[in-house]
Structure formats: structure tokens, C-alpha cells
Image (cartoon, rainbow, N blue to C red; front, side, top):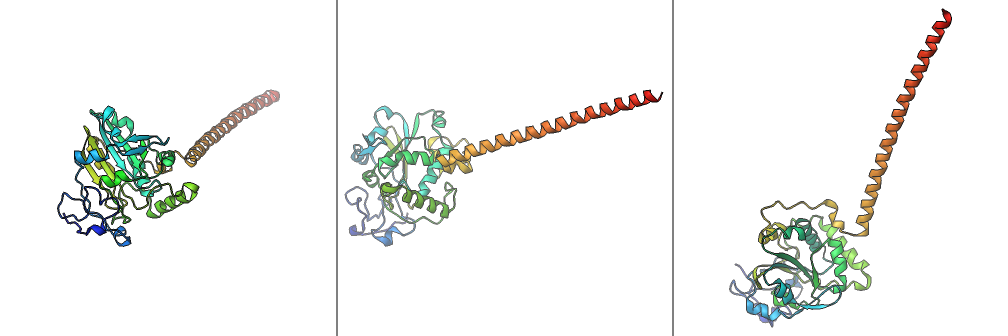
Length: 315
């Protein structure tokens, strides 16, 4: 695998003190982006996809995650204790206003539901982690229609310790999970950021990229670290690793990108009213037609009676 060789002064902040070495020369080491605009805006990074070792996991076990209620839990609680015998897919997102990551979560959640995970022989869960402030979690869950647990790591220590880094490159190809145009994604992200008001800077570090880690029996058996800002593992690959690859992934509805927002509810209500009005108009038209035909029948009978009476008078 081709890797970049860099000096320690090129190493991004947060990786120097970890086991993930910037001056990578073997496939077991993780090369990372050089610091500064030239490295951050480059194309794809060359990231190692080697799962962290038990020793490396022990270093992050006690790192805190925050719930939407701003309560702190240790990272290890996601894959040990009550979850010891479970498979847990932990998905690290970018900042909470990232339009590409929101698209990813919408597509993922339309294909994999908590109910579908219940059909697997091994208890399986999906957990989502973002690098923003926890008070944005309810907004994030609503706008992505995500029913899986969502946590926040605003310090980004987990990202650093698990080998995820910074990037701004979007890669050469738009992934299948992004079902909007690039322009729409950018506008959506910009508007969400601007209209969030005082929480504009609470979404998380704009250059942070994430990845996916599958925990089984307390160890990571598979992982993928993003190499650009649109490099989440495609949904069919996630389904395969979870054991759902024997089914055809359902297609996401075109309007599902609205999530559970008020706009979506208004559109749904408007459509329902329109259908109801159409049914009433059709019913009224049928009644008028029926009434007209009945009236015509009565008039014909009256004319027949008048003709008969006239014939009797003539006789």
C-alpha cells in the first residue's frame, strides 16, 4: 500500500502522543495528513484500516461520551458490561452540520432499522458519535430520522486515539449514499449552520473526519477510517458486516431527507388534505351525475303519461 512519509513536525495535532505514527513506512502504521492548508485540502489520505489492538482500546476505555442530557458515560460502556456479548457498530460522524454525513445517516437508517437488527441471531446494535456539543443531538436525530443512540465527543479525543484525522478533500466520486446534488448538500449545511444562531460553532470541528468500528466481544474485528469527507463505508458494506447482506437494501424515499421536521409534517398534511378534497370532489361529481340520470328518467315517464292521456282524450 502506498503511503506518505512525513516528519514529526508534519504530524497533525492529537496524533503525536498516540500509537498512530505519522511517519508511516509499513502497512501496520497509520499515515496521516500533513498539517496546514496544503495537507488538509489534498485529495484522499492514505489511512490504515487495521483495527486497534486490545492495548490501544484500553487507552480509550474510560474516555467520556456525552448524552443529549449532557450526562457523561465511559466509551467502554458501548461494548462491555451489559453489551459484552453483543456486536456494536460504532459510527463516528463529522460535525453535526455536515450535509454529507446527514445524507449518510438518512440512507443508513432507511436501510437498517432497530427492528431489522432484532432479526439477527447475534444481538446487534448501531451507535452514532459526533464531534459537536451534546445539545445538538436532538436536532441531529430529527433531521436525519435516526432512531439509534447518538452521543457526542466534543473533545475529539476518541477520534485522535482511534486513528481518525482531519481532511477537507471530498474525493473523486460522489458516494451512493448521497442522494442530493453537491449544491443542495452545501446549501443545506450552510443554512443549518447560519440559522442555528448561538449554536453555530457547536457543531464540531469542520475538518474532523470519522469512520466505522465493529465491536464483537469487546474487541474491534473490523474498521474503516475515512480518507476524505465523503468516505463513509457504503450502506451495503455495513449490511454485509452486520449479517444483513442476504436481503436487498430498501430504497430510500425521495422525501425522507426532510426527516421528522415541521416542513415534512406540513407537506404530509397538505398531501393528505389534497387527497381528501379530491375524493370529495369525485363523490360530488358522481352524485350530480346520478341525480341527473334520475331526473332524466322521471321526465321521460312524465312525458309518456302525457302522451297516453292525450291519446285517451282523442278517443
